[in-house]
Length: 368
Image (cartoon, rainbow, N blue to C red):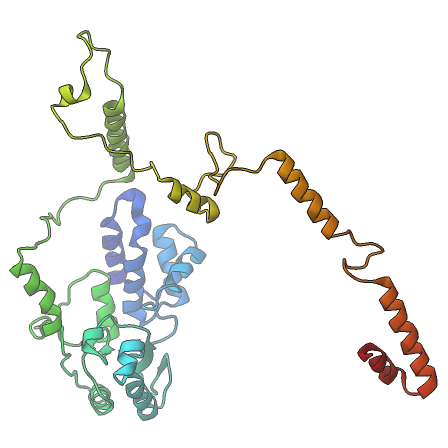
């Protein structure tokens, strides 16, 4: 028997229907939230359910479920308490808040209290540096928290209360939040009646209003095109672009100068890829992916000065060979065989005279 209710299956079909038939795989993210809303985490059964309704294999679903931290892979408490311990919040006291909650609740990162109420985690960033240190409960913000304030919030949650976040709507459980993340409205009475934006958040909006900046109009009811429609539109756009680039037929009238044809008297401007010799020289010395190879057709490698005459080059090469004789008998260049033999004989003589151990005599011979 399936662990998922008929309501979940109906909602799953509704989620899939939001996407074009050839893009149903895009429904995987909200479907994972949906199964988490019923079980409190993405269980193996939830992975199997998503794979079946989308026609995927479990490995494909599991790869997505393990990538995003919002999908929990083991049972989670009613309230997910996340404390930011990243740089900004840490400087402002975020680590002290987290350490205090660890000691107070008796759990560590990604662990749940015995009563099943609280799951604690430290977060790398909660995207609220201007309100740090911050803590979220099921992704709703508590700004500027201190250790005592954080303890007060979790104690109220364990007692059955729902403290009001600094910003946003009223708190809900993790399962209720997962339903919203799956794309369904919060049906609780007055769920979005309270809360509001923070002052720092409104700063950007007020600046935009003052300077007359607004987002372009958008109709949210605009349908999403299928892949076939998108490909067809792309092909039509490409055909129009190629037609615009096609050379015009030869004119029957006498040729005119460009400035006469366009009516422009502006001077000619070099093409953007017409680089100076200095730039080309630098690219040749420190090439990147866009630098042409030296032997490419039409490529001329710049030099610092006039190339040497062949006679000078041959003389320089001969001088270099004479100053660096090749090594012989497998010895590195520069070693003298006579000096090595002399050192070896002196070491053997000292060994026989002193009667010392071979290791000590060898050391003396090497030092000498």
